[in-house]
Image 1: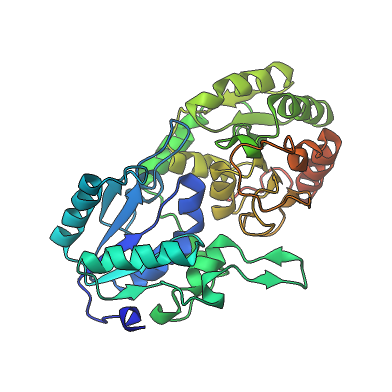
Image 2: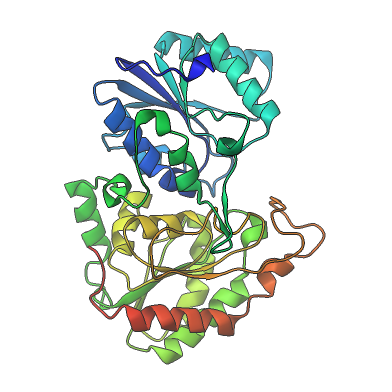
Length: 366
């Protein structure tokens, strides 16, 4: 396809990636691969505005790094002619030499629409736009019974930029600044549990992925009884503070709530010092994975198993295969979330104990 030709001397690169916190973290290897492929280019991201207060925009992960130099934001829900024309004018004004297409797996019709739109913006070179074949879909590995991760899927489609592997730890480098490290240290200052703590992110952006407040409180009570020496740090957004307070009420050791109190990148540094994170399929889970902290993660079956599982070793994933798996629903209207409600607290306790046994105090990666 002619639009897949890559100009080696590109001076302006537009990167198309939508999503929130977790969507951005799993795309880190691709962003860094692009930066290495076009080191002298001015790189700008075209992305969405957050849809709700529970979402974190892409800037919160990439801002301050050397991966991109600017952002264009638009609202995908605004499909009127005026809104589309505004985005087209902004792209034409930037005049990118190449577009890097980091969209999630989508239908052929949607890809055709994207091709037509970007070509109407004057873009004739697109990297990462899949053929209408295998490279447009996540691959299934029958040996492990899992689907290709989103991180691997995105990076595989950038093969025109040269070889790269998600197993390369340098591709996951968040490039923390000295100020961010100081902010993380301040967040744990005078916290009695700072040298031996677990983190819990009890919130869920999507209702279909929510294990439920009662389950998280019960899990915290059980862990506190089994590991009374541990501190607890709760992470997430401002909307998660009520759940965090409920966990604190049953916790025996010291507690510090960072929900909405620190930036996502600072929370990643805090998570790097934790023994483990207990979480839904969420942005904090992917931040923990990026810094090498294992998670006990409770997953719904709305996505195929493996696609959004955290990277790295030592994670314990709780997931149920159900007949309605892969539904993609944000609100479960038929099955009442049986894929996730069938996961019990006992199972989560066993998974947390296994991580803690394998990762003694002081095992963080700060």
